[in-house]
Length: 166
Image 1: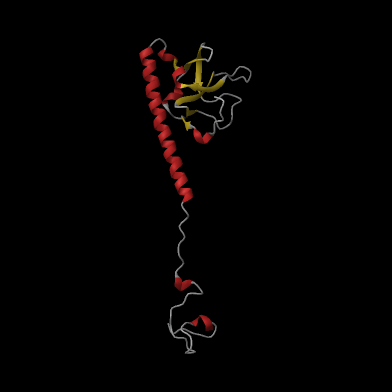
Image 2: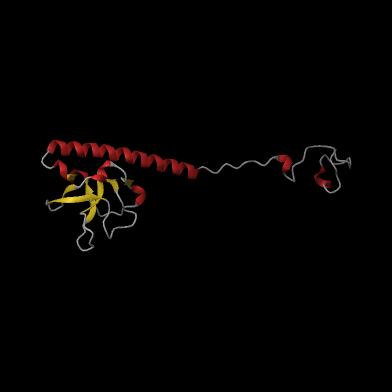
């Protein structure tokens, strides 16, 4: 893809039906390969699991060729129009329908991700609610009363000697 992908941009596909199939992919060379699965293989970043991302208006799903050996594993972001479940081999109409409904599912998951991101952003930008302390409990807030000295209106100036009649 030539661009850096971050976890926060991706949608997680774990638990979705799409993760349960084996896929046929069309490589950049035009060669068709089977036995690809969603998710990361050995040697990929720790956060990459079963993820998809929309770039340039096109969905890409992180997949690998199912190999466990670092020397034979191939993995990367595969464009939705270039993959299909191997079980649909030869059924062009079913493949197109699968790609359409999978794109719809990914759009819905992306909408939910963006909504959650917006909610989190709003929550972090709203200052926390500060409860006002009851004025009667604060040492510098007093009810207006006549001080026993007869000069001032509050006891704040004579708090050591003034005793409230309350």
